[in-house]
Image (cartoon, rainbow, N blue to C red):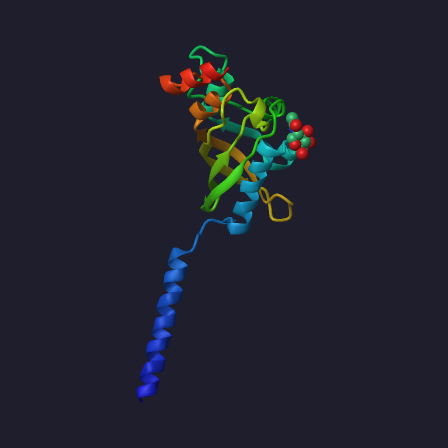
Length: 199
Ligand SMILES: *[C@@H]1O[C@H](CO)[C@@H](O)[C@H](O)[C@H]1NC(C)=O
């Protein structure tokens, strides 16, 4: 009797566990798993650190859109009336991204964290060194950290890329980057004076 009560309790526990697992399960069809999310994150990393047009064609939807005031600020060299408008898409198609990113040097891009839900991958990254040759960089290289949200479109599991990147929201420490590029003079008189004396 005692053992059957325990057995029944065990069954109830299993039943409760199973139903809570179902309640917490992602119910969206074609919900991405960790592996697909990491694939999407690494695809974006490749577009920044080892760019090729083939990779852009393989990883991005044709209606790809990239929002990044950080990138627009770099394009503008920090100038308020530069060619890129803040608050709107930096690249409004895959072709526009290819033209822009394809003409940039590859940069170091270290993935620090990856989170995802069914169709959105969020990542935190560290890099870049705008000029990989520290000796010839205009200024000492500072750290740049950013956060990127990648909205994806399901492309079918039969494809090598089951999830294509459709929309990017990317922001990062463009102030640090502009300093590294020698565009911004920081407001720290002691350090500026030291560099001036050494030069
Ligand atoms: C970036 O890396 C890719 C892959 O290694 C290479 O094909 C491409 O030429 C590089 N781009 C630049 C601007 O160096």
